[in-house]
Image (tube, rainbow, N blue to C red):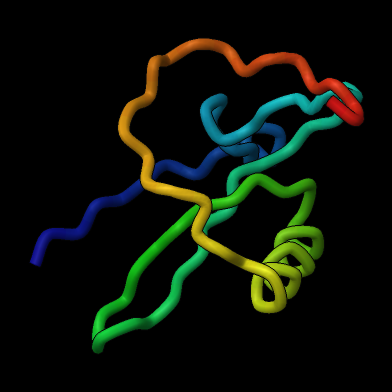
Amino acid sequence: MQIINFPSQPAAADRPDHDFVSIDQDGQEIYRFALQYHWNDRTWAAEIWAYSLDDAERRVQAMRQSLIVSGQLYSDIGCEALPFIPGG
């Protein structure tokens, strides 16, 4: 067994990496959260964006009531997201 000793970090550095934090259309920080579920004797994972752990848990509750498959993903073209347009 190999033990890896990570140096302790100051509290100010205890933040998610840049790729796991974004800014929403109102300028508020939003974070990536990991989800896990069991199916066919295996554990699977997904991820969502939420404002806090409590928000993530509320979103999961909403998924339990209304989650559907929207379609298969085929590509990621690597562009920036379009701006949010209310009612658009």
